[in-house]
Image 1: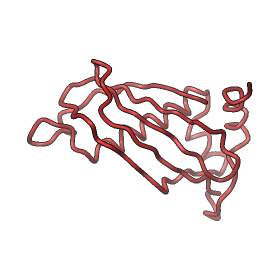
Image 2: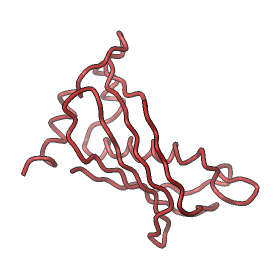
Image 3: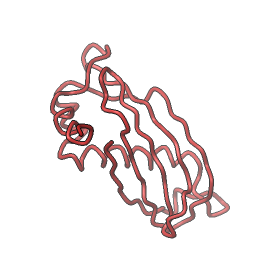
Image 4: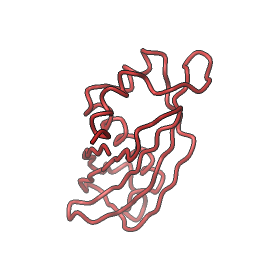
Length: 137
């Protein structure tokens, strides 16, 4: 299992009239978590795209438990529970506030696609090499 965390501060523009983070912004927080999760492995989405692979979201599930508000410092935890063996990768994600209370949880399924043909492909070998140590043993 591979797990990473990153932090995001809630900007005023991300809140609604009630000073609560608008629900749609959590998709962006999840995306920041996924991008940083890969970056912390020493690989980036930009590297992946340069190798000819893109990763569109094909499924997004989320559960809202508590609200975040303007200027809160959020921690986004991203977990890959299984090493991908085909064209799919699943991220389990959670967002916590500064008191370490769980605000939101969900999972996101993405496909690895060839950027030219848009057909399914396997995970880039470089990403596999970086993830494997977390799943062996």
